[in-house]
Length: 71
Image (tube, rainbow, N blue to C red; front, side, top):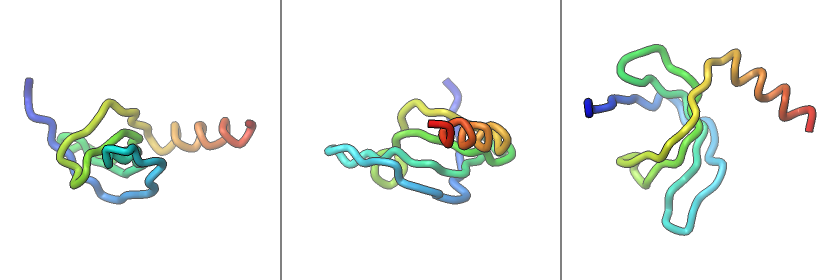
């Protein structure tokens, strides 16, 4: 499997933290040199390891926010 390259441009929020120190974060991330997108996933301390996550465009993030506001 090819190496996945990423650059965290901005940490927006830490949503939770597990007892093992992993944090679920909302970040603005560029994957493999592409345009940055909003990303929600679990990260180990120092961002050395990551869990599965969800990547959203700005429009998708806005629609998600609108949907959450309906709750």
